Image 1 (tube, rainbow, N blue to C red):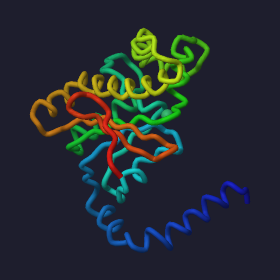
Image 2 (cartoon, protein in one colour):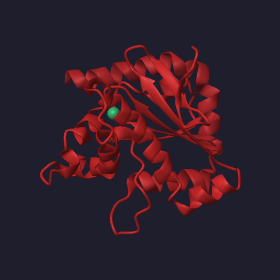
Image 3 (spheres, helix red, strand yellow):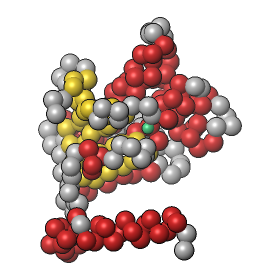
Length: 210
Ligand SMILES: [Zn+2]
């Protein structure tokens, strides 16, 4: 057996004898009654920023979409496979979540790729095409002539703000927000210090006391 498959099985066994032992009834209830998460998390696929870890969520608590650079694309009626948009649609129209959190993070490879111009490179594959969604964010940030060491952070933060703006282009999101049944929240996680920032009313990121 391969080492990686061994790791999967060892992890599964640890889960069965650890977390699962305390959550057996929870799993039974979720399995028989279905899920009703109140929060949707849109985060990066990056292995270092697992929302259920960061927010200490139990199974059934969070509906999660993860993709490269935690991007919400704008409404797009063209033919194609709109995975993130479908996940948001399901969360809002079927599960009726009460909050959608878009969480950016430190040293995001997708954000760096966009900054490096991947979104303008026709040979950059699916990732290039995907991060081209935030080429407008790149243009905005670069136009501000920021010091070199502030550009990446600004791009990561501005990417979250843009995704929140893009969320509102979906009629079902717009309607739920207007009706007061859905709230949108921006977040940012710094990996090195494991610090969380949340967007406040002034559209600024505010460090949360741990
Ligand atoms: Zn990332």
